[in-house]
Length: 515
Image (cartoon, rainbow, N blue to C red; front, side):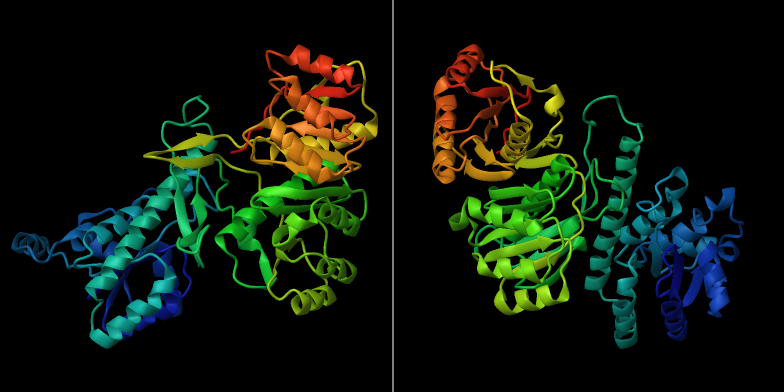
């Protein structure tokens, strides 16, 4: 059997090639692969000696030749194909080992591989007769079958062909995404096509419910996603607890993102977030003390916090770990890191808590949501307007502390399921009403959760008040400030109601529905 070897990633190449040679496989190698095999003393012939043509155009043309592709594409079950090979003196190629230029790590025109994908696709098409290997992880299984059976099985060839087509599809997707990012596409908000390449990172115990199978996939390339970027959850180190579930990951991502948004909002200090069913049930910021931020986040709704997700923006020491084990059980704890004695305590007292040390989350890319036969696609919901662009529309103005509470309430409200009302006081979220069909009901729920703690604080509504009854329900919680987008036909009526109740009202000009 003849094997064509042309790889950029030379991991395991020498041992694999040497083993193939020992099995009687003739090796044909191109360019740098040939030089690597030569340096290792592995017998082989060069592509140039097979084609009779030298490499051209700084290596852009070397394998694009009938004597290579005829050997790969020949259907040996067809007499005419065998006759063509014999007439041209072309020897069949039964194994193609090829991986591509690392475009995702070094995107550029020169990293767009042409010959590699052509060989890979040709071999994958002809997998009835050709084995194609694009991943060094498959070197071992291929060698095992060759040693045991003298050939690679049809089932393995088919599996490897699928992997090869997936490899080239992801590669093309990365190139399209790069061209979009670098301005090669039309000057429109969205490109005419979207291309996703997803790789299964791991299977999960189950989905939202035990009867649903589930897995988590990493984005190899996707619109708006920097090439080669890995999600924070993939870089996270799990120090304890059971395997992460579908909902663990979904909720932990919501908590971790919100915690870092709060940190950026505050500028300095520490933030703590508690999330339950994708919605914050507690959140707090503190200028210097993460333990205090955590305690205040838990105070907001300790009943809902049981079995929730806790995200902390500072390293966990022994003292903070003691506070954590004294509070209701968390399903997941996410923080930048942990002291050893803190981990010892958490592992002994909270054995079922998934304890994650994680890097900061990356900026969000395009948001996709499935509908029947298609997808809804939108830009990520970023808070684009800050307090400098907000308008105070009431007679009463705001003190600095009230501004900070308004900003916190507004941010957390934007990350809470609609209809949503969030109440905050002194850097602490004290009441959350979410997922309600009625804004009045959401306000009443938030006020009941706050239980008087919102007095003098700020309330936020993710969308405008269509009538004054919603504003009155928020005002009944005791807040001094209400922040909302504005834009209702009855804005004047709602502003007048705020003046009547001696509230300060801020219009952001920006709605933040979340469904």
